[in-house]
Amino acid sequence: MTTNAHQAMWEQLNLDIPAHDGLLAVLGKFYGDIYLSQSGRLKGMEYLDFVLSEVHGLRIKELQDAKASGRKIVGTFCVFVPEELTLAADAVHVGLCSGAEAGFAEAEQLVPRNTCALIKSFIGFKLARLCPFTESCDLVIGETTCDGKKKAYEAFAEHVPLEVLEVPQRKTAADRLLWKSEVLRYKQLLEELTGNQITAEKLQAAIQTVNAKRRALQRLNALRQADPAPISGRDALLINQVAFYDDPIRFTASINALCDQIGERVGKKEGVAPAGTPRLLLSGCPMAVPNWKLPYIVESSGAVIVGEESCIGSRNTRDLVSEEAATLDEMIDALVDRYLKIDCACFTPNQERQDNVRAMVKDLQADGVIHYSLLFCQPYEYEAIKIEKTLSQDGTPMLSIATDYSMEDVEQLKTRVEAFVEMIK
Ligand code: BJ8
Image (cartoon, rainbow, N blue to C red):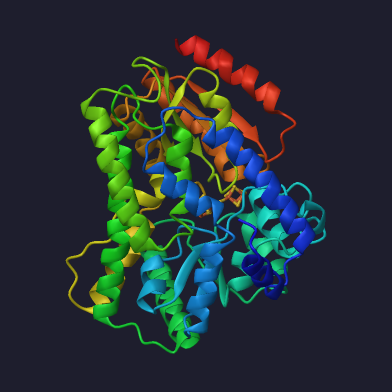
């Protein structure tokens, strides 16, 4: 991955080169241990391996080339930011959430220690000059979801060109009006940034592009209903993670090709683990690259993960934008409605998430749920209690885990997960 050309590009982006080299070395080792050590991986996963190996290399080069041709790069932290609008303005949309414990000491100069690891990570990556995606951004979009993010953006605004979208906390008619005004404001921000007007034709094409990406991921999720499980949860998580970085059209084609292979495997009743292996649904906070700790623990404890009820998972892919709309106004309404269906734990009340977790357990034939909250994430820690109660009505066991990005609790988590899997067996 480390070529001279890449090195020069990283220097131009003002990365801390020795620290960045160290990060890539750790990431490569971690990826080898967790991903490349798996047996029975599908040929189509080679594409994902390649994308991840070049996530700071060729993909960043593509972003730099896009910038050189006059396109703008927009970075986001939340699935509430409508990618369709970004694409309709001919800008590039990239996810900036980070899943590694890097730059935490620097981050703690801006946010309290008892802030969730996801927030500390995206701030840390910026302050420690480790993220070429953040450094490539012409605009970064925050959002008013949890309190941690809201306050973190106030401090972060001094370090990146940032705008914050107001996401309501409820879903009443008044909240929909507020959200629509924010979606329109985002459209205007993009038009000012890029100098491109978002027309009905451009937005329609962008809606089709993003829907196609979500359909490919829905197809992947549906194939995971099979027993034996045809793909590991680790690989499925990786696919969902790459969805936030990769070119959407290329990504969609690759995932559809992979799904063809998975379909053949399902037809032959082959899988990554024997039929009858305990099937678990992961539910909760997003797991950003390279946060693979818990999936690795679960899948090396005699279980297989069959779904991710998370923003890097089904919460991002479940709903499509209606393609019925003909005018720009109607398309904006369709976007507003689709995005307001997101069942983030920041909403109150949030019955949809309870219903969605229950439905996923049923559809995926899951034997149990592992609820995952990042430490200090109040919205998801609160909802873990409710979800456990809801699931108990169906007789579905749940293990609630709160952790962070450190490796200190791996042994302890493994003991708890193994006991849970044993109980399910
Ligand atoms: S729509 S889940 S991507 S806000 S883990 S920062 S909630 S304290 S990430 Fe999220 Fe959008 Fe919701 Fe999804 Fe706060 Fe919790 Fe940290 Fe979190």
